[in-house]
Amino acid sequence: MTIWVPQLSGDGPRYRQLATAIGHAIESSELAPGTRLPPQRRLAHALGVTVGTITRGYGEAERRGWVEARVGSGTYVRAGSRRPAFSHVSATRDDDGVTDLSLALPPADTERDAALARALAGIQGDPRALAHALDYQPEGGLDAHREIYARWMTDLGLPVDAGELIIDQGGMNGIFLALSALGGRVAAERLSYPGVISVAGQLGLRLVGLDHDADGLAVDALAARHDQQPFDVLYVMPEHQNPTTARLDEARRRALVDFARERDVWIVEDGVQHLASAERGTPLYRLAPERTVYLFSVSKILAGGLRSGAMRVPPGLRERVATVVRNVSWMPPPLIAAVVGQWIASGDADRQLARQFDELEARRRMVEDALAEFSPCTRAGGFYAWLALPPGQRASRVVERLAEARIRVNPAEAFCVGSEAAPQAIRLCFSAARDRAALADALVRIREVLAAPAPSAWQTI
Ligand SMILES: Cc1ncc(COP(=O)(O)O)c(C=O)c1O
Figure 1 (tube, rainbow, N blue to C red):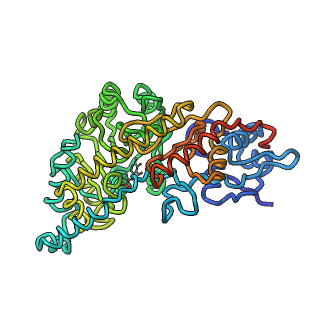
Figure 2 (spheres, rainbow, N blue to C red; figure 1 turned 90 degrees about the vertical axis):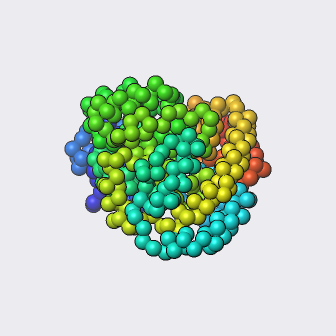
Figure 3 (cartoon, helix red, strand yellow; figure 1 turned 45 degrees about the horizontal axis):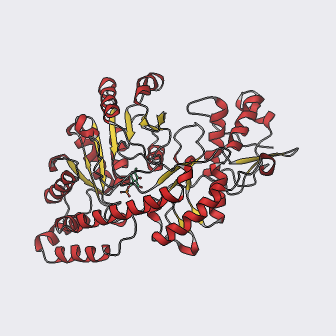
């Protein structure tokens, strides 16, 4: 009889590596729900580890909610235990009565369609813009488009020169371009944006998990981590961490940059996931311009479907990024950049940003009020709340019970880098509810689930 034998890799003890391998095998459908895991003795023999390691690994996978031990029968993959796939975008919002709070989408904006129509009309009335839209252009985009992006970013507290920018196709594209150009080992917080985990996986780049706390990346621990597992690139979201909402203070930002200079590490600074707020700190690219890529996108401000953004690239990296752009798509689509340019130049972008900010603030207050007893973490300009669950509650169970209540959220597990166990916490994107009424209704159901006593252990096995 053949048995499933995983390849153990990554940081940490073998039993955790085994638990993580089980999670990955479930995610890739290699292990289907209901599958019985191999008998412990046989797997221990196949992997050359002790039976105790397998017992602890299966126990860890059970603790993470992926498998269940059945007395006298073995350990089985649980139904519904698939780690949520990255980028699972449903075609419509709130369809079938489900309120999907799993994706950080900007709140619906009824005036957006009219702004798009105006931007398109602006291009139609401009023969030069029409001609540019149909021609091949340089990899970094047209000068005129880069200038408009640079002016707007500067107004938003992100001072840049047009010459430093490469127009891209949004934040994900920026991550792909940056990591493709840089290569090497990539370090990210142990909980981080799943997009970076996915891109690193696709490019075959090893990920190194970094410690973080309520105030963001644990910068003090970077040197020791680098000694242990050297890395070449540090991906970080200093302004608004996804998923925890943490923000790095100025002292940590400066210490981070000192570390990067000392160890010659590149920084990829992702600024996509929030709207600019008055409390913005100093962007890392201002502190270390020679080694920091900054990612900016209009997805969360204007519309995700536009697929447009701009990366601020250090001079020493520009040609490498341009080569990747050429290899992927020759250039960013000029028509889209022209639409965004019109949207910004007409003032529609600023008006939309102001409306979005107010809407997000109103929703954030709703979450703070409705879930006050659970102390949700939120921050101005953010799209989501991060919620550590009450003691005894398991994130996988809470996600399941919310799904039964027709609400979708993400467990901490979806953001895990490396083999560390995820904390019992969920991310709740209040921005994505259809409107405030839908959010209010969802918050009542979420409160009920969180306040319900955690099921006792004997009920779950
Ligand atoms: C931190 C972060 N970076 C990048 C992206 C991707 O942005 P875009 O939609 O512009 O590709 C997201 C999307 O949610 C994000 O949260």
